[in-house]
Image (tube, rainbow, N blue to C red; front, side):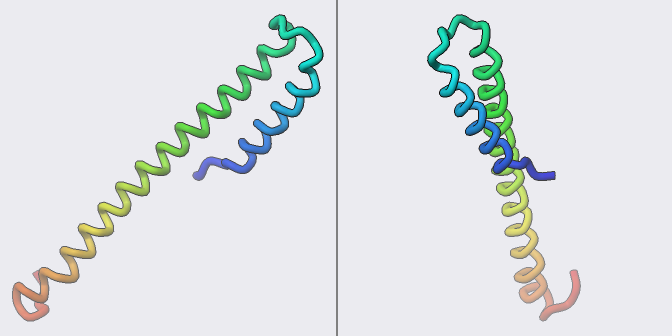
Amino acid sequence: MRYDFDSAIQRIAKLWSIYRSLREQPADGSWDWWLVNEINALESEMATARENEKATARNSDQFNTQTNLNSAILPQFLGGGQAL
C-alpha cells in the first residue's frame, strides 16, 4: 500500500493555515504545541515513506536488471538458445 502523500501535504497545509490564523495569540504552549507536534509527525511519516519507496524502487530495479541480464544473455551463449 502506498503512502498518500497528497493527503498528508494537504493536511500539513491546513495545519499551517490554522497556525497562521492563530499567530496573533501568544505562543505559550496552550494552543501551538499540538499543531507543531502534528506537523512534525506528518513530516516524519512522509520522510519515512519516501525512504521506503526509494529502497523498494532500488531493490526492484536491481532485481529486474539482474533477471533481465541473466535470462536474456546466458541462454544465447551457452547452447544456442537451449534451456539451462
